[in-house]
Image (cartoon, rainbow, N blue to C red):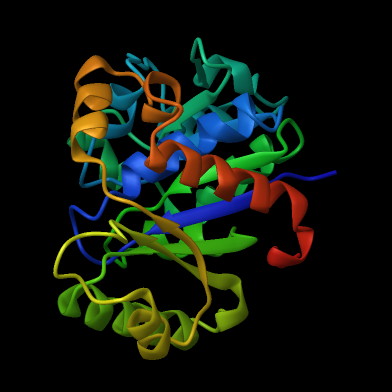
Length: 251
C-alpha cells in the first residue's frame, strides 16, 4: 500500500510548524508502530528540523534528483536518507541555500514516488512560502495540515492560504487545521477560529514553552523528552487519529 503523505505548512512564521511535524512523525513511530519518513521542504528554515532530531544529514533530495537523472538503472534511496535513533528516516530538501535553485519542482514527484513504497506515512514540512517547490510538494499530499495560532493575523493569513489552495484546484476537504498554542492567555477561542475558517480543526495543541524549550535545546523531540506533558499527549492523540481514521486522507 502506498504511503499517506501529510503536508504541514503555515503562512506565518513562528507558529510551531516544524516542531509539530517532527513530533508527529516521532509519535507515529513510537505509539503507532508506523514506518515514517520526515521530509524538510522548508527551504527558508534550513537545518531547523535536523537540529530538533540532533541529526547531521550528508545528503538531500536535491542530490537524489541529480542521481536519478544520471543513473538510468535507478538509485538506492537509502543512500540519501538519514536514519535517526528514534526510527524516523529523514530527508532534507537541500543542505545549503545555494542548492535551492537546483531543486527542480518537476522532479519533486519523482522524489515522493521513490519514497512511497517504503513507508506508511511521509510527513512533510512544506515551509510558509508559495514557491514552485511548495506547489509541487503540496500536489503530492493526501492530507494538508495548516498550523494556525489563535490570533487575528494567523487567521487572516490562513484564509488567504485557503483561497490560494482553491485557486490551485486543491479541494478544501484535503485541508484540516491544527490549532497550536490553543490555551494561550488572551487568545481567540477555538470556536471563533472554527467560525472564521472553512476547515475542521483536527487538533488543539496546548502551549508548554518550558518543556518545548528544554527538548529543542537538547535535540530531543518533546514527545520523547516529556511524554506526559499536555503538548505531548495532544500530539500523540493526533497521531492516533491519523492512524485510525483513513477517511481523513484523499487518494
